[in-house]
Image 1 (cartoon, rainbow, N blue to C red):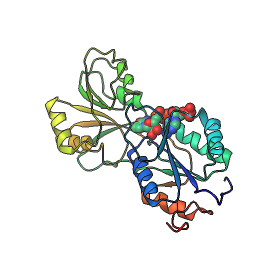
Image 2 (cartoon, rainbow, N blue to C red; image 1 turned 120 degrees about the vertical axis):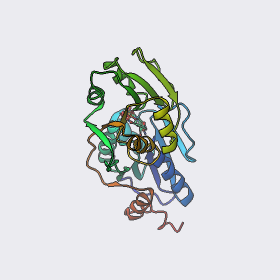
Image 3 (cartoon, rainbow, N blue to C red; image 1 turned 45 degrees about the vertical axis):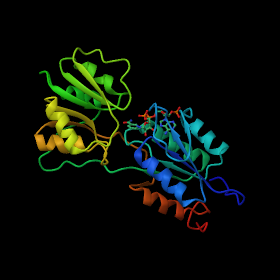
Length: 264
Ligand code: NAP
């Protein structure tokens, strides 16, 4: 870890791209006594303001992130990226080791199958697309625009594709329609979306969290199959499930990164 300096507030870098990262940014900014910065991959064109200094774009792998940690004299690193963003999480683990910076991951719990759910589990997105089967179906695709092109392997289905930013280039399949929308999505609105478009299958990642759970609840209520993509493997690092637990982790660090110890 960088030796804590007595003439400046401790520096915390949050790797973001999730609502949890924004909430954590706001919570740490409200605490005061820390210099907080947020890093985004730069995938979303108009990211919501997190109220802290924000940088955008890749670091150039684990080595690049380690260089950034040293150059910016970061005292603590929080990986609050999406459960499916496995590469940056691996890089964070390696960079924290290289730069000797304490790291914690903030990871929302996965969704659990409930009574009435009709889930088909898939190990990855290509497996999920194959699980739709041969016969044409009407599918809500909620995968994120960077991975949605995987459905081109099954052009027989009718796809309703939802993403925050436009899918570009458009899919090469003959039957695709597009909705641009940013969550949260309520179960009632998702119910209306599924029935209004005669959807008979939902393609979803097991992202967890409340903001995008509405489609899962609506599919359960309507008896619609969900093809659920399992989470990728993550590095073995200390992991917590809430913004409050990250604050606790910061307070336990053996230097003055803790807002509480700094009397704020
Ligand atoms: P990824 O495959 O793990 O990351 C690919 C590369 O993007 C990383 O190697 C890194 O480039 C750069 N990167 C990712 N997150 C970054 C961050 N917070 N700050 C700076 N660089 C970052 O991740 P992804 O699937 O492309 O996701 C990108 C971002 O979108 C993540 O921040 C994630 O939280 C968010 N997101 C992802 C999903 C998803 O399902 N994958 C869903 C919602 C939001 P370098 O190696 O050059 O540093």
